[in-house]
Image (cartoon, rainbow, N blue to C red; front, side, top):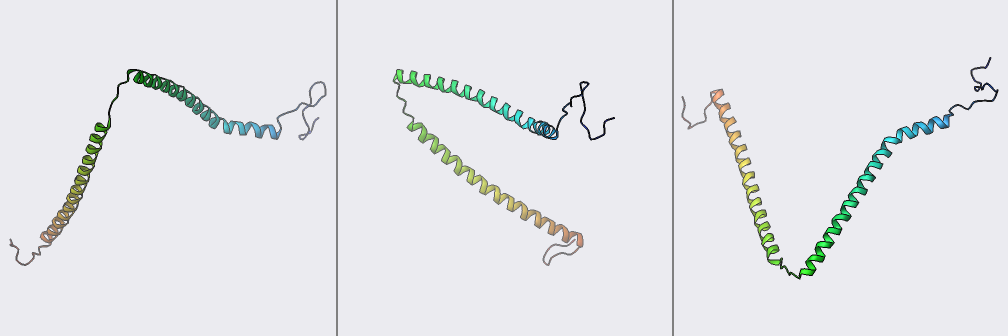
Length: 135
């Protein structure tokens, strides 16, 4: 009979190699890393697809540039850019004004709430400040 520590033996009497500790470690490490590798692989495929799409868009843009050059239509965009910048400046200015007004309203609301709470507390306690009308 074979002992617990002896290797398995085939019918021909030659030892049969079972999984070694190294093989088990490698298999476990592979299983541990498999999800990360699959995710990385899917990201690589997605990047490749986006690169193909980008290349197509670049080709389309190059074609549009060629057509634009062929037409020799000179578009002066400076006035439109200036109008947009002016509009942006005004929007930012109005935004700042609205933010300041909103902050003032928030502080006023806080003050009113504080004063209301103070007066309610005085009414509940029955203490009236001097000069105020009593019941």
